[in-house]
Image 1 (cartoon, helix red, strand yellow):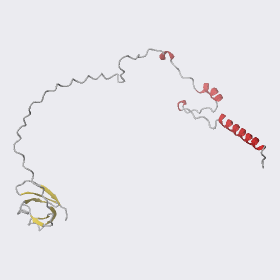
Image 2 (cartoon, one colour):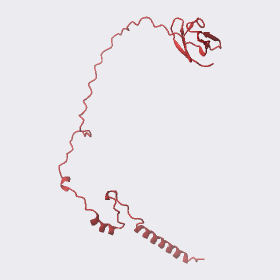
Image 3 (tube, one colour):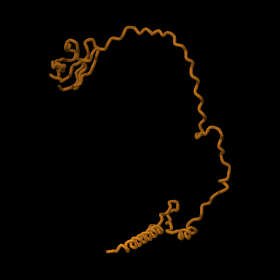
Image 4 (spheres, one colour):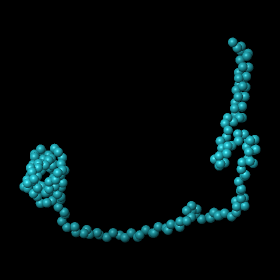
Length: 190
C-alpha cells in the first residue's frame, strides 16, 4: 500500500502527465485541413510552413482594383428611404365623400308574396315490376308508415296527390297533380 506521504506526490505526477498529454494533443492537428471549395480541388497543406511554401506554386493572389473602390458612389438622400426605387410613390387616397342626410325611404311595391313551394314528396322508390314488352312498367313505392303503393307512367294518382311522370331502371320522376314539386326518386331498395 502507498503511504500517506507518497500520496500527494503521486497525484502531482499524474496531474503533470495529464497536462502534458493535453498540451501535446492541443498543439498538433489530428487530420489534414480539407481543401477549400474555391481552390479547384487542390489539396491544402497540413501545416503553416507548408502553406507558406505552397502558395507561390499554386496560384497568384487575386487582382484587386483599389481605384474602383475609391470611385464615386450614390450618396444617400435626406428624403424618405425607398427600397423600391423603380416604383413611383403611391397617390394619396381620395378625400372621403361628404355624408348626405338620409331622407325618408319609401319601399318599392313588391306585389303579393310568392306562393310557398309544395312540401317534398315523402315516398320511397323501392322497386320496378316489368310485366313484359307490351305492358307498362309498374313502380313500387312506400311511405314512412310502411304502406306500399303501385303506379304506372301517366296512370291514376298515387295517394290522391302524386303522379308518376317517368319510370327508369334506377329512378322515377314524380310531381304533384298540378305539376309542381317535380322530383326524382332514386331506387332505395327497402
